[in-house]
Image (cartoon, rainbow, N blue to C red):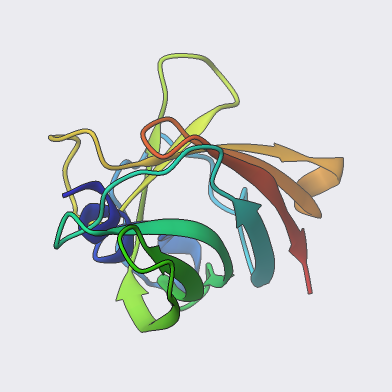
Length: 145
């Protein structure tokens, strides 16, 4: 399901400059480094792993040097309305060039198969990264810390 794909393969990036997994050597070394904190609100209710939950919002830390993604999300049970919290820690991430120069895909496995990915657009010399999850409808900003 989409949320499972998002969580087990959502926001992760790697670069040869720091010796982490490199998914595509054409991504300029140093484009992403350090850590950034991302916040997003899902624009639509998207079913998660058990078809009864939907993700509402999430906050994540992308550690580009370590090539990992950690997040906390707020989910809602569609039937009862109960809210729950889900935590994921140190999921590996991979970065690929998109078909448009200057836009990148963050994926949770080291290939470009499947639809689970996040679109990244760095700005302000890499201090700010705009992102979009085309499946969940999440959009947001990742600010370097």
